[in-house]
Amino acid sequence: MKTQSAKIWEKYTDAVTFSKIRDMDSVAQMWESCVKEYADRIAVSDNGETYSFSRIDEEVKRYRTQFADLDKGDRVVLLIPNSYEFVRAFLAVTTLGLTAVILPVQLDPKAVFGCCMKFGAKKLVYQKSMQDKIDQVLAIKPDLCVVKAEEIPEEETDAAFVAGTDPCVIMFTGGTTGKSKGVLLSNAAVMQGTVNGCYGYKDVFFQRYLLILPLSHVFGLIRNLMTSLYTGSDLFICRDNKDMFRDIAAFKPTAMVMVPALAEMALNLSAKFGRNMLGDDLKTIICGAAPVAPYLVGAYHEKGIALLPGYGLTESANLVSGNPESLRLSDSVGLMFPNQEYRIEDGELWLKGRNMLDCYVGEEENDSFEDGWFKTGDLARVDEEGYLYITGRIKEIIVLPSGENVSPAEVEAYFNALEFVQDSQVFEDQNDRGETILALEIVPRQTVLAKLQKDDPAAYMMEKLGEVNRTLPAYCQIGKIVIRDQDFERSPSMKIVRYKK
Image 1 (cartoon, rainbow, N blue to C red):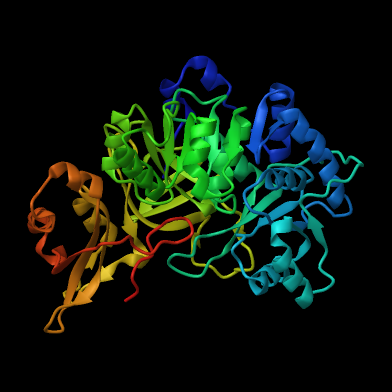
Image 2: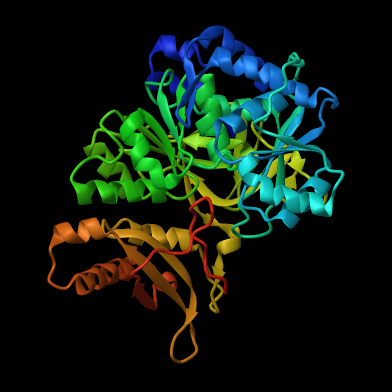
């Protein structure tokens, strides 16, 4: 069992900035502090308008009145796309000591109804763009109390006293390897995840963030929205990712929170158009939610941008570790953040601490917990410097007829080290004789191939892939290699959807 001190992060910023990174008990406490300290600063830019901390607070006071009839801890569903209305509703609900149940806006009406019933929602808040969906929900349950995100009462309601142990939010796991579950996070967990987002780089406070990740995803809610508010930063909300590069050109962000697929796309477009599509003011990219290729770290470093990989889970309020030394240790997800303990049991990472979930809601029988430890399902190792490496998922392990266990992610990492490999997937297949083999599919990085100027790019790639393959232990060598001409299917959080056996 090991823990990490916050002091280890001090060297990555200056003493004054580090002293301002303070733990807080609840969203209510954080918001009160933000309004006092940053009152006139712009907190959110959305749909052509800017909102200062003090203006948001005035509207949050009034919007709380929509829920003044509820009891502390009651659950309120938020079905609101990325927008200022989401920010206002989330702050109103959580600073009143209620629990926000954040639903992805893509859910169909029956799923929305099912979630309202499962989680015992007292009210549902929706944006007018969701009206057709809400009408269908109300056709199923006419007595459901619904609230429009745009309608603000005139009367004000004060914030409640909210303790760290009080529930804060229910979010959904990605469900890429199984059924999606509702994760209950306390206020303390949300605040630990928020503060963790401040560690590992120099310029922490008063940044300009662009929001492109969905706020229904823990990475978007905690690292993008909450850390932005905590640090007095300006968050520009991109309502449609098709407009992302237009918004970047207008807003000129200094920091962004991205998944690797989006970072890759921006890099490819930058090469195509001969200019930095993320803007010259951008200095930091926090990258996670999927494995980060070392190539991306180096390519962004050449542009003067620090791309910092990290590792997190919905169950850990997103942030478990972050890599402040990404250029030197580009295949690591970094150092563990403070106020948590970790251990590795039979190769699996186990966690406990302030940032961890209270429970899976409605999932009383669950084998993810043992003696207070949460078993992540991730295979991991830690080096002598304390840097964490994720080497695969237990559920994805391939058991070969020989009895050997193969982690697809661990094998993929060898091929991903080739600069022309953008993404890859190792899976179980059969050869022409019906024998079980390991197969590999790759998505090539076209910008690299163009620079190489090979007469036969496919032959060149197969040669290099073959060279890597021959360095692997015999039991995990690849029996079939396919070069794809299109991307893999991806989940809403941009993770590759793995093939099912």
